Amino acid sequence: MSQVHPDDAPPVHDLIGIGFGPSNVAMAIALGEHNADPGTREKISARFFEQQPRFGWHRGMLIDDATMQVSFLKDLVTLRNPASEFSFLCYLKSKGRLIDFINHKNLFPLRVEFHDYFEWAAAQVGDQVSYGHEVVGVAPVLHDGAVEYLDVTVRSAQGLAVHRARNLVIGTGLRPRLPEGVERGDRVWHNSDLLKKVDGLEGTSPSRFVVVGAGQSAAENVAYLHRRFPEAEICAVFTRYGYSPADDSAFANRIFDPEAVDDYFASPEDVKRRLMDYHGNTNYSVVDIDLIDDLYRQVYREKVLGTERLRFLNVSRLTDVEETPDKVSATVKSLVTGEETLLDADVVVFATGYSPVDPLGILGGVGDHCLRDGEGRVSVERDYRIATDPRLRCGIYLQGGTEHTHGITSALLSNTAIRVGEILDSLIDRSVKAAPDAARPVAGG
Image 1 (cartoon, helix red, strand yellow):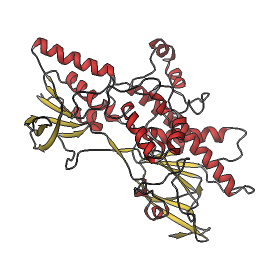
Image 2 (spheres, one colour; image 1 turned 45 degrees about the vertical axis):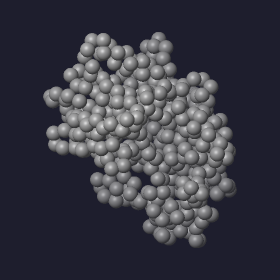
Image 3 (spheres, helix red, strand yellow; image 1 turned 90 degrees about the vertical axis):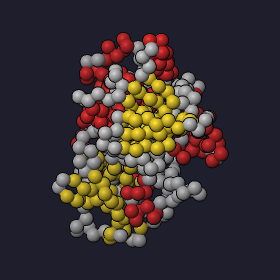
Image 4 (cartoon, one colour; image 1 turned 180 degrees about the vertical axis):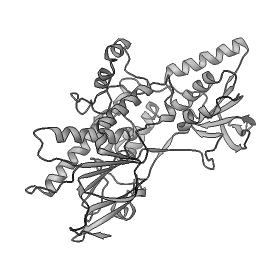
């Protein structure tokens, strides 16, 4: 552990953010608005580090006709500050599309448009982020036997540099999940790579794609590939009998309300499990009913015309995939009969979801001060701060990876604006308690 040496210590940021996806963009906006408020006494300095060379959010999934599954009002700011200049409506005004959008009478923008909104917002707080900078380690800094600061080692084209922080906010997003034993390759894709990989097929004549999965992304991939390659057969493989519709009814959507986070956090473990079971169909392995209807109309039309390119291998699972330079062979087993079907395809796409990243993985020795629950999961306070032993005086906040404590909105956009406001309030409250009567040294930028 490092000791504090005032003469050679780097400047101290109140907050360092790891990752700069939508959640930490929202955090940067909230900080900027807080600091710009004339009535603010406690200014908070922050720096964010993002390993990508520029802002990007699921770029491989920005299919041209795919829409958001959340209302545009659940943008980066509106639920926290409806008067913010960073709202989706302000974005539309800046692009000259506000009236057009209103006339569209739609709560759910195109995904590619919402990504453009994120880029627009990120650019306006670009002075707070360093792109092309990967956080590779975090080390505790001791003062009088307690961890007073955290040294964050960052790697960039210029080499390694150390930045010091009083608090961290981790927003590194999710990682693509594949079935055990399956690895991505030239012909084995995760759907997060779809648009990046599919361009490499231009000039070829694919004859078959296999898409594995039963959720929204899987159905979108099936529809997109069917449209993009009019001569190819598209085989959808899933263990269900058919796609299940997402429940986006008004009462069910209350599971995404900010108040629902309070209820979930306060609930005993058995109630938490029941709530997830009851309302998992609002988000997990479900598909918008309009897309389900479109796919069914298409498959029925092909049956009528005798040109069946869209195949659904339901109540089945993929048991083996073997890639060669020229093709990929997928073995699909019926769960009813046990019969196996071998499909030779040009590409197998796994739309099999994402997994949260263990937040302690990047923390090194700092993780030894973080507490876990009886099931080995990170313990998280209501303000999204990891519970720690008393020796760690720094706050480590999570944007994601808190589903077990905060519920279904943990990795979703629905509650982002509210969450960053709560983290900001916690930062201010803890800062005031730490130094109520003295001005704290604040780093620039």
